[in-house]
Amino acid sequence: VANSSNGDVMVDVISAINSINLKTSNGAIDLSEVTAPDIKANTSNGRITAEGIISEDISLDTSNGRIYLAVKGIIDDYRVTLTTSNGDKIYDGLKVASGTINNDGIFRISLDSSNGDVEVAFID
Image (tube, rainbow, N blue to C red; front, side, top):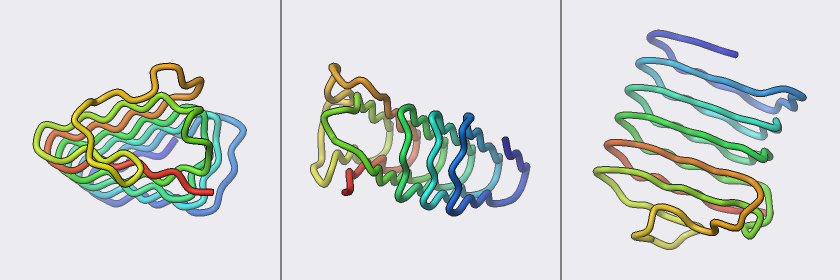
């Protein structure tokens, strides 16, 4: 667990056996090469960037910012929900209209922004 009121939160190259929960009010959240069973990140006024992520349950939420997630995993394993009021929903390089993709996925990804693009990409 990491909390900040007015600063960025950065997590690089970590493997956790428990959940990771990150929160800031007025800053960005950056994750790189993070492995955990459950990852949650929330900011009110900042972007979220998460690259090289390995997790079965990912929830990234911001009110005012872009979300970019690059997951190391098999695309068909994930149920993905993309939500934004003022931005694009991008699923593995393709702009989509629907907010939920692959209801049969055994793992979960949820990206939610009010004012920004939400994008998920799957990498080898």
